[in-house]
Image (cartoon, rainbow, N blue to C red; front, side):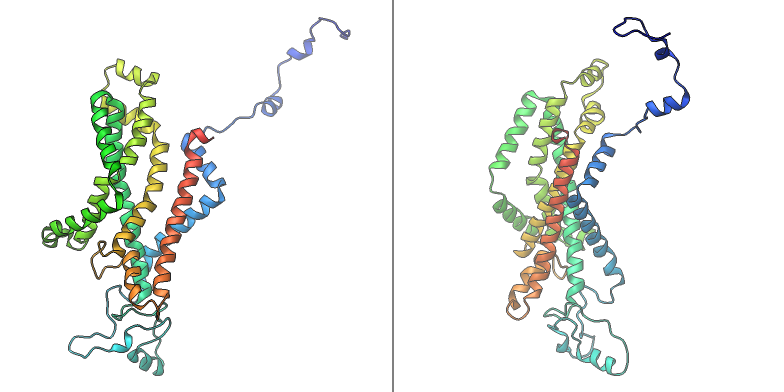
Length: 351
């Protein structure tokens, strides 16, 4: 039956059940996803952040693997043998130069592994010292950021959830720490703690790490948690009035359980972003203190201490300053760009 123009009569063909093929065509199923999965997809679309992440991973893997397979050690002085005079020909070698003994071995037809960046004034292979210094700087930055994360997250979540006098007292302490000059306090604390902890650490299992590294971790735990605490507190202040928090409170849930199960998971984007941006700050601070002689204990190298040692022979061996400076710049730049990419990918306010 044909339908007339401008007629109110219904077309019965529109009510015929759809076939299986039509259902497959019309209904497009979307794969279930999560906040983390969506954030990773957005992060991978950011080519700069992805390239920065690849650079960080490569540098980290090289700093871990190369010292295991490299024929030279970071603290081995070439040309120094027990009961024999010191062979000074190994000191201050330029890139791909060899000491006297190595030259004789080469003349005899034996293969000698080259010194890619030469040696320092003590006859130690400079390349492996840069690699090992990179490992130390990355390790200090990573563990210092974890310390800041744990302290800042704990204090910030307590202040944000408790509110009232607890929040007032904690935030006044935060304001006092914020008012202190950062670098001056870092230098003073590092100097005092190094002397105070020196004797106790030297006679314990922590002697290999050194008093300077322990004091550096304490400095980060004392001073650098305030930014993380403020961010977590602000996030929890906005979340604690949500319906699911009120529902948990009405069922008799404890505050610590609500913080662990509801508030912290919903603040995870802020935690990830802040931690990623804290690592380059920690690396830069460690390099700065090592440059001033308040970092790692000799003969263990770090990028800052290598740069400081290079100042003595800057006119003759400028590459000894350029190499650690470039590595520090590359690590800090890559981490900052990756942190910016994480912020763009995981911050819901920017999407």
